[in-house]
Length: 173
Image (cartoon, rainbow, N blue to C red; front, side):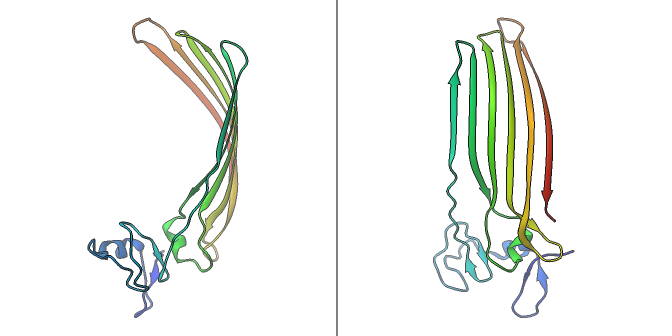
């Protein structure tokens, strides 16, 4: 299935890559609204997409003693939707992921490091293309990760072992 923007003259759908190839690097203003363009500017349905997202992030690291740490992390992350969504009807939003992470770490200086983290990630505004292209997708990912690093020699030999368990569910496509 070819997904793309509708051209004004013939009504055929064309992929975004076609328009990017046609973009002239010397172009300084939008052909539709004549606004000044930055070096890279995204234009959707004749409008400049000018979105701002505030991404708060925080971390607390608590020392339980010389070798032990507890940590808690929170963050919101945004990204542009997939190319297909640029042709959806309705307002365009960033896809959003909210992360919660709790971790424990034991570090024995110059000998080994053991770390375990549990995490939960909530996804919002994911692309859904059936039956219509919208941003009504959602989901989550949760899991736990174990990490072990050990130094074998004083010079430079060490090894790492890591294991992760992940459960992810998403409504998209």
